[in-house]
Length: 370
Ligand SMILES: [Zn+2]
Ligand SMILES: [Zn+2]
Image (spheres, rainbow, N blue to C red):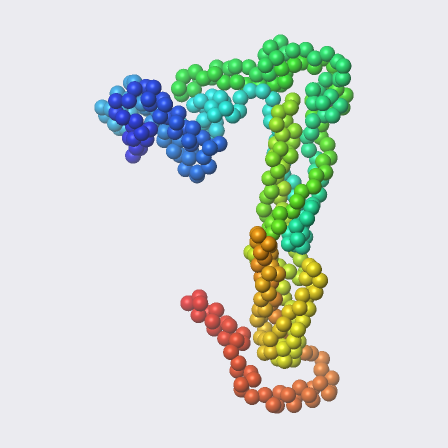
């Protein structure tokens, strides 16, 4: 059951037309997509628009006051707030393009642009600069964006009188609304070119290879996007440029894998060294990293090194987790066999039944899942 329209707009039962209109405009301003990105803003606006449709029409309002929503439905009332393609279409249907100062006639603003930036993991750890090369629409330098050949005559558009926009009356659910549309003759420029610029053929814009540098944000992750305002395609006739979105793609690293704020590396240690304890080296971004392997280290055991993971703000970094891969020696010669046999013969339960083995790990994992 739809809500009471008076309640929806927050007005008294005896509110007059201007109070109702004011309440609706206030709600609409709050719910406009430029001001409100709440997921239910659209539904709330539709509800408010429907309430306004009912209360702004004296006949409908009287029907509702007497018979409620059932009476309206019985009389064939159907809200016009439904059936619009998008939220902004719906807004312009109610308010024209003038609502909230956005839109309007005049030359079109530039389109947004999306480019991909491939980075090495090291660049996301250390930051630095990256180059972006891409084709974009830019203003024509030859004619400075006017589209006219230098020194040639530019006439004022006779259709729009130089304003670049035309006022059109559109019918909306609330009666007629004036809306501004770009002049179809001059394309919003307000002027007509007699002799077009050779470089841009009168468009005022050309497609050009652009090369810009950006600072790589520390710790940026694969799949994230950076937005650079005004670095997209140039607008028509001096209108603002669109935005540039940079889609980050991070290449796989042979040693390190990212896991949130941490880095993970797998390091091999021969079983005898794992038994005795040792120090190994892995190749880090700033030279070798020493990893202390404790005596008795087991396969899959992790050595955690604080401050060697991903940057996570204020100079702080996550952990580097080195997962130990214990390698069992193979292809033994005779002497090695003898030594190992003697060693094997010396083994006692306390050497091999130590906690932390794979079996115990599995049991612990299974326990967690139960
Ligand atoms: Zn030009
Ligand atoms: Zn015009």
